[in-house]
Length: 171
Image (cartoon, rainbow, N blue to C red):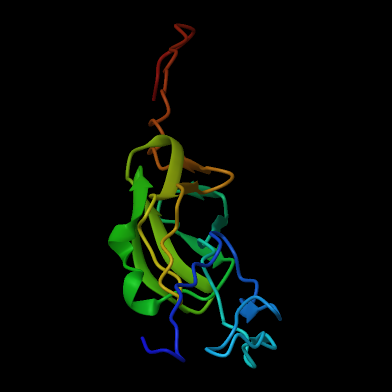
């Protein structure tokens, strides 16, 4: 930049939240008169967050019958960018998600199972779907654990069998 000011590029390590520092060792440079430099470092450490967010997805309850819903919790490892989280970021199998709300590290949604279904329900957050407050995208897929146990089938009507006894007349 000038004879007395130089620039350098600082590249942070990936998946790190460690504070960054820049220093220059003594005697590693000289001035125009060839006097060795005293060295130095930044007075303030550099704030770094290159850590990709992770999430644990859980359900309460984990077993659903007809006309029941479950509260799904998304517990992130660090605060999330509220503008990056949308219902469409999550994929629901054999049901639908609604009413996404939350802030910071804790978010919830409501899962409603499909009607006339017996089997497992699942919820997945795809890779690169949401960002944390530092702008890092999630870098893997996350799934509900354990899966939902769903039985919204209507019960069969009971079979009724009439047996007549020929013993006598029916009044």
